[in-house]
Image 1 (cartoon, one colour):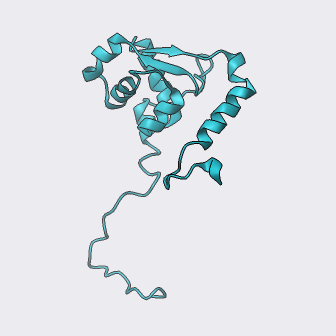
Image 2 (cartoon, helix red, strand yellow):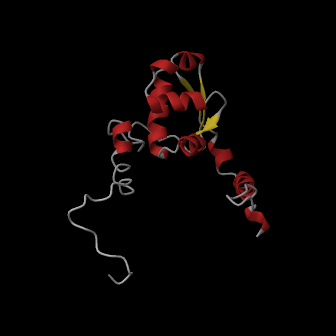
Image 3 (cartoon, helix red, strand yellow):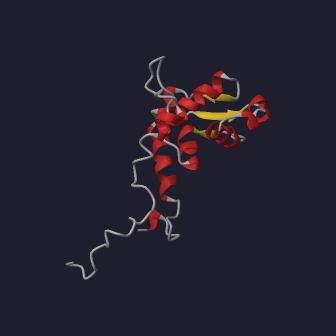
Length: 146
């Protein structure tokens, strides 16, 4: 072959490795939410900055919740935004939105939607950007030190 490696032997089984990226992940969010999406069909979907916190009932029900619901309630012992939950649990943001709505309806989460006037305040956005720049990257270098 052009790269210097011999061609694969057709009598040997194909190497097993991780499945191609996106193959299982394309189905998983659909399965987690039973096909429901956070599209605002019943009203506007929750903004990503919405703060959620576990209720006492939610913490008591941890052992009876599905895996992802358990993780969401567990991480919400302290108030978390939907964006933080999605990032920490490595779940799609819309999956977190749908599951958070389910958990709120079941009384296991309290949801605090921010005031729309504060959300559109440019000083808040500037503070968020400055905070993100202050977070070190994988090398430990802050992005504002470029």
